[in-house]
Length: 226
Image 1 (cartoon, rainbow, N blue to C red):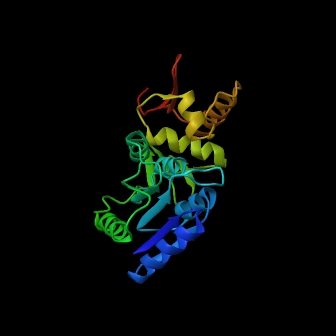
Image 2 (cartoon, rainbow, N blue to C red; image 1 turned 90 degrees about the vertical axis):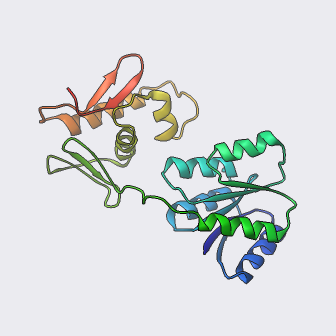
Image 3 (cartoon, rainbow, N blue to C red; image 1 turned 60 degrees about the vertical axis):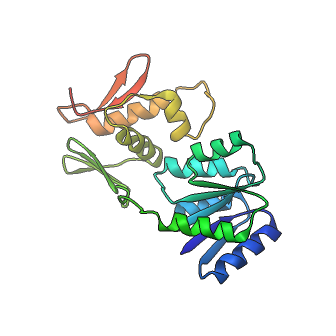
């Protein structure tokens, strides 16, 4: 299997990496959360082995939450000295699949990693999102409506993707701030309204049926119905 180990303790990283390689696995290593997130999001791995407490501005929980928000379903094994039940629950709720407390026996770590690697991967993630005559291609990063290609800016693309993944559901401004802008606070600006307005102009102008709808005092929704 191809594994990603994200561990800032150099001694622990050498020990784990060596053992996994001796067991026949290919192991990439990142020493901080930011580098680990970049590798996990840009390359294909069978299992991720993550320390909970990481430098680089992105800890293990944040890393997994970000991956899951991007529809990345790679199995995750957390390694952590945080052994309290609440900490283990927090890691699992963030999207982790297993949790191993330090110090640990390498034989147990190997068994857990290989068990995660044997899990069925399930359906492949969708690469196209559609509603009515609107289609988004996640691989080519293109958007068309009625066969006509629309010029969508990167932030607008992320906004539209989030709306499409929640088609028929109300998406609040708080949700958009967190998932599209990565804000975990309200900047007290109309940035969302401005971007939605621009996106609506590009998607709906010239078409009989509007797709983006404002839900009063709640947020926005994309749906095919009038």
